[in-house]
Picture (cartoon, rainbow, N blue to C red):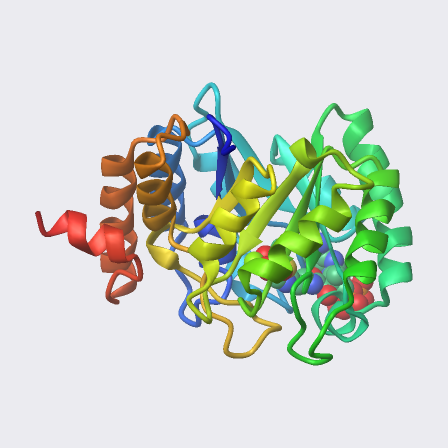
Amino acid sequence: MLPRKVKLVEVGPRDGLQNEKAFVSTEVKVELVNRLADAGFPNVESASFVSPKWVPQMADGADVMRRIGRRDGTLYSALTPNMKGLEAALDARVGEIVIFGAASEPFSQKNINCSIAESVERFRPVARAAKDAGVRVRGAISCALGCPYQGDVPVASVVSVAQMLDELGCDEIDVADTIGVGTAGRVRAVFDAVSRVIDRSRLSGHFHDTYGQALANILASLEAGITIFHASVAGLGGCPYAKGATGNVATEDVLYLLDGLGIETGVDLAKVVAAGAFISEALGRPNGSRAGKALSTQ
Ligand code: HMG
Ligand code: MG
């Protein structure tokens, strides 16, 4: 049986924009976050407090957080890889921090410049300080369905990293298909394995759509009892450390699927379509959402 309700996390302003070569103005980022919050998302991933040398596009995270409107009912999240990022995020009144590890050693090295074990030790004080400040903590597992450097990633590695993030006190754990290589059967197997050690209500599916499998993977996850999904308006994105990876699954397409299944999200599809048209125009590129394109020409 499919769930009646799903929590949809909009990650476009962070995962979607982080890979843009030309700097997207703070004003555009702020308007995007505001439009998405206004569409009713319970959670908008809005910024990253990472090294600007590594990801220059996210260098204005503090300004973005200072200038956005704060809608009741929307949690504004940001990535924090270390204590420096955490301190900046707390100053910027972030409602949820995201620590981001990987199920593959080479990806961990490329993305955050340390091993998986070192990353967990680095995240420990970050998670503790966030909790002490009353801020929610989410943990992401990159390369849970495959790695651009290592190829196959054993399910056991995903389970092991999920357990480590759980021990750090993560409220929610993201199973991320960073490069969009996963297929439905494998997704099901990963969620079945991880949910043997962590309650499935705390697991989310974060799917990139490189191979066009993301909607099928979401349906497989729904069937596995997963009720939290990430998506990016207009299908924005890619990953700076995963060459060739395309954006997250487009939010408009996910909403169209969920609406069709009668699954409640509290998100207004028409407003997301308008936000998708806004950011596609601001970036000067075609809208990456099929549903977004179809609905904006009606
Ligand atoms: P490092 O170079 O090993 O760190 O990077 P460091 O401590 O030696 O610092 C180097 C410089 O960065 C120093 O500056 C620090 O002050 C500065 P300098 O002294 O040379 O002038 N620095 C910072 N500045 C601002 N904020 C900070 C910060 N930390 C250090 N927080 C580090 C290690 C983790 C910092 C670096 O590798 C990094 O920032 N990585 C982030 C990479 C990233 O953002 N990747 C994309 C997000 S993950 C993703 O997209 C996957 C996800 O969507 C799920 C999925 O799809 O898989 C979540
Ligand atoms: Mg991602």
